[in-house]
Image 1 (spheres, rainbow, N blue to C red):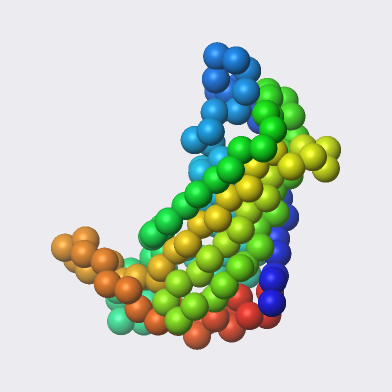
Image 2: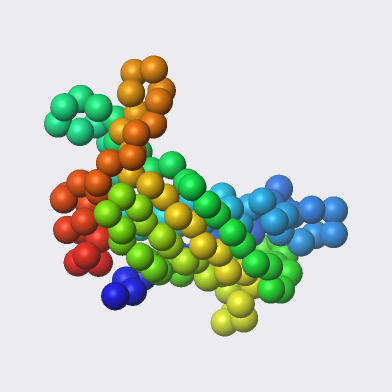
Amino acid sequence: MPSSFESSRRVEFCETDMAGIVHFSNYYRWMEQIEHEFFRSLQLKIVNNNTEGLIVGWPRVSATCRFLAPARYEDIINARLTVQRIGVKSLTFDVEFSRDGQPVAKGTMKTVCCIVTEDHKLTSIEIPAEYTSQLSEA
């Protein structure tokens, strides 16, 4: 199956540590950002009101990242998101980060489709058809 989506970004100074290397926490933010870009490319939303007026969202249940080489201020980082698995209630994405073709990090993120109640409780639900049809076609 794998469907993929690509994006790139320039490393900003504020994303680096005292050694001038991208701080590890930014890779997690970048994984979430490319996930959102991927959803938007499919005309989908990461947070959506469904027909019953409930909020449908995609909280993360796990995220990992391996760091392979340093990236620095002004580097152009290419990211490629690959849909690893479409489950009944969850999605698993792999994200590969590279600079000039050299891998710098690899991450995996698993999200679960949930409804958010008025009292902010999360209940997992089957992925709505509007999402599965778009994700399957991607």
